[in-house]
Length: 486
Image 1: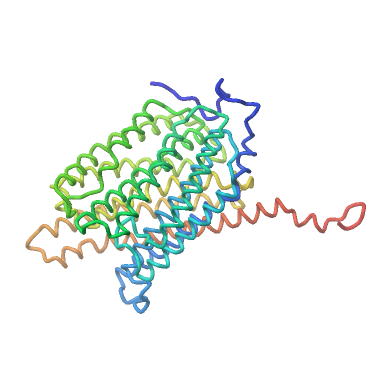
Image 2: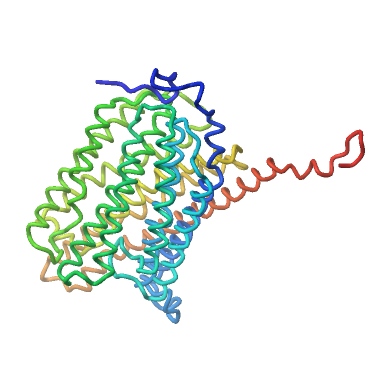
């Protein structure tokens, strides 16, 4: 088994130590735009969680806020999904990715002003999309909820962020490519291709109606399973060895998992209940099963890396996010492969189990990885310690408990619901009522998750205020020295 060098190893002959900036200089070079991206991402996550909580409550009490069209269930759910995927996961993932590129490449962030403009345009696109979705003007397509009015700011904003990332990568003084770089570069090049293609085909009305679910399913699968998952995998390969103070267990296994993910993952996402050609469903089933290969490779690589963890530094709290995210990814791969088979999909295809699987990947793995990354990176960008460090552990625990209640009850409830739906002796309403207690449990999970993210947002704002106080030192303005008042 080959073992890669730890992140703290000495420079290799391909590096130029004399020309390399220090880690403090690297962090300071893009601190403002990157920190703004993290704060904005957590803000959208809080807002999306609040909308999701209202939608979940309306499942049990439809009369609540029934007189407000913008707060109907059919608008709240796509708004929640869009805010999580585009407002939080994509934005925070790009911010963490750019920080990792500069850190691993030992290069300052190139053109931070352009990065700031790109981040602002991206958030303008998010705001425009949210307002349109709440007004009822959305695409009606899962994971492609953003209307056409958001395409330009999102695409231009991403273009500016991507250009800065590639220029920073080109300016690196450490030439060796650590595995995190592979996943980040793959994500950077994959998103503009799939987003431009899907936007052109789905927004222009060029396609026949029968082709719309195929293109939408293809885009949604690639966006989550390649773009966002690659950003999360890149962060995992950086932070797990870094926080555990261990070298990566196997570089070869990381290479195998990288290429197998890019080969197998793009063709999944279609269940047997989709109105698409049969060969598309068959290909999706094969893809879902083969995706177990990269998931197993990555999970085993991380488990082996964490096996000999021997440190107890103050940064170790961040490891808890990553430790819990690993079993979520493994469970998702197993259940997704099982549910993809037509014999099983006929039972669980129209049940809550499908929602549980989606949330297990998006919230259970991608969300936990990115939140753990924010907890570690934010104080490094501001060069300031967290104001109340003890708050981070409750945030982590509330997030994990919330995700558990958001996912696992839906898997069990979906299976029970599917058994009832496939029993001709049980009325449809009675079969659906079987899942009610499990759906109610998810409301508790969303509430805990939303509270945790509100706590993190307040802590980020406090961190920003503390950093400004340390930078500006307003107390020094009124200090008295030998020469009199300043």
